[in-house]
Image 1 (cartoon, rainbow, N blue to C red):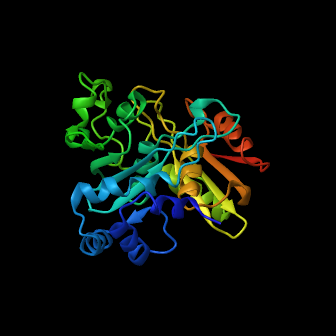
Image 2: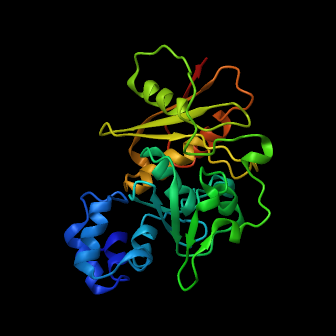
Length: 294
């Protein structure tokens, strides 16, 4: 039975498909080190943006789009040179604001991996206004390059002129570069502590309401998502959606979720509980446990 990965390989030049089959780390979860990229360039004969654009079908193979049936793939290059794949995620039957855009998926992938910034984002369709605004929150957004098929490369602000961003609200340190918060919560539960660690690294400079989700699967795997706030508010990425996008990149079915924990401030200005419960209920019967930090 063909997998999305197998189908993606048929949409890629033969030399690159052979190189990917031979050189991709296994299991492939959408991350390529600079050494991996160099090996692919040497084996395929493709370089730079040509290589990244050709790999977009592979990024899109992580998509779950039961509503739009429109698969979008994105590849973000971190300042380390590592590539991070992302794809759109939609929750069947749920309101569209629960969706994760491909660019958000790739950015959160890089952020969860510890990158402090990005140099470029490659995507197979022009970024929508929502994504342009989300990318404008990034540390180094002024230098971020957008790479699209069949178009000249352009800076983010070519696509988002007269932008409204963090500096307009007095925030000087953008997403991916913020230093974190000293949240306190006493627990001997490893999953609660995983969520707490992620919440400390979340980005909430406008509501001052850090939060994070940790999902534990039946085989013991844990996936986390941090809250990523935005100056325009609506493009903010909730922690549950980020965790689910991480699962999708690992091709782990949502039916494997065994436990789910949300950690947020006890006296937070806003709460993620209602939105997180709704998103979780769309894909699982597991109940969300909520823990309050100080």
